[in-house]
Length: 315
Image (cartoon, rainbow, N blue to C red; front, side):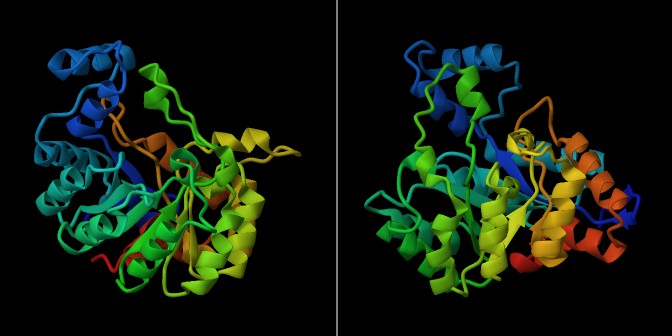
């Protein structure tokens, strides 16, 4: 069991938010751009435009690279997201390769005709644990879409699974680097749209990433009203620049602990690509913020690993 030295002593860290950018992910994105062409040439062009190391063709090989990266940083493992709809099989290979290090999540569009059967297969056949919904990206309402209700019901029947819902500001860096449009409907980004669903499906666990990504107040309201809502802390949280008066991580953590408690906060980095790898600077900023506000060792252990393991029934 890997442990990481922190101001709270040695902690077992399990990242609740990282992305698994497979080769299929890049093939799909480059296929959306007429300027990049197709096949190996398009992947090479994507590498030039992004400055990133393109992943190997084998998802199992990419998982091995991530496992070595976790070892390098003293990280126990991560919940990793297949980051476009239809890439469930890639992340399933990663999970099968490192079942004790990688838990699988998948981006999902519930508006598709075969949505419910695809979700069942992801959970029951591929062993994935979290379905990731992006209502602004795929243009639907969390409060009104019947496909969303079906997914919430499905997850409620499966202990150790959860529904992740991206709310607030949404910016996909790789799309910008590749010159692809991001025609998102930000009207669909309010966390309060989840309230009716969370209240009805009380056995279903919901995760709101990035402290609500600019909708912190609404996220706190939702989590306060619904004990089945969890909040992840991932990324640099640049959305704090929208807040007036100004806030910093220390204040955000203090407010979140006051409202949600340490039992429903999930540390994450939003790590995704190489050569950057696992974003240790995000960990450092968050562990230091918790230390500086006087959080306890018990609270730190909960936020930085115990909560996500418990949520996913993950040992």
